[in-house]
Length: 370
Image 1 (cartoon, rainbow, N blue to C red):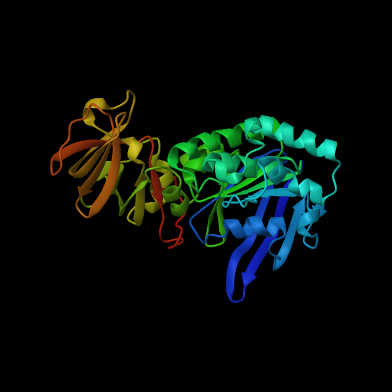
Image 2: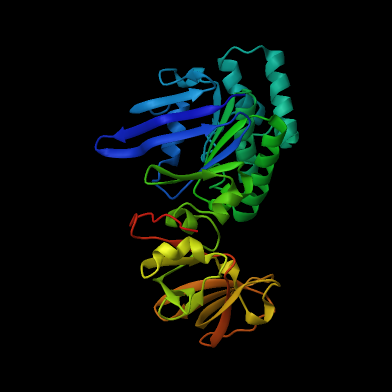
């Protein structure tokens, strides 16, 4: 068990920079998830830690040891890939034991570790089978078991659930979370799926174009995104964004998005005084947009008009896809709502939960003003 540190790590491939001055301190026994779109640098960061890529600048530490020049086999880590990479001619037992045999681990110790890992993963009955006799979910558990038997200081997972169907992904991510609790070892997990990140992580590192955007707990990322990219990436469906201005009307601050205007509550107004008259981006999550008939109690409500583009009935909720002037946005409303395509309706914004971004500071990733 050990902490992991990325200390000013850069990774360049010729003229292309995959990692820009990456600084992350991962605590011992933590479950850290690296998340971001394809090409953001998350897998490169994992491969640099594993020793599969040489870093261009900076240091990578496991515990207090700098491992820049340590061979991958000596870093005391285990990696689980998207591809199961099982030997088809070997049994599950032999697949799990193979790495230990290469290290000349005693047979009794191999047996103990394999059987213990099989029990943890619930695959004791599969040890004599070959990979072709297993389902996708079972093969993935064998791949995880192969990592467990090494008893490493750090586990690395590179999109291990991508090949599984939706139901199996839910089951397997729960198993991996339980595995972390049981093993009490440092887990670093790469995914492009923000739902996986939110449900599994102790902390999440959000990356974009090789740059760390924000590192914090799932709830803080959801409630207090550092910039427009994080706000749009964390949450499903994604946060809605409306371009507009903040104006002062009769002593109150109002967000004018052309098609609609909403008043900023008095207790939040002082934060935005320096943005009066400026272009801003107003953000609100779909779950903070309500049918006026079913507004939660004690909500600071602001009513707007919109047209229903189409609906998705989910059983426990309804997704509305809406148009208001030049804006397209979505809402998650009470399942008792009755809306039809093309209908002009009223909706309520929960003005206790909104975000304002200042695009004048950083055009690519405007910081949140709150």
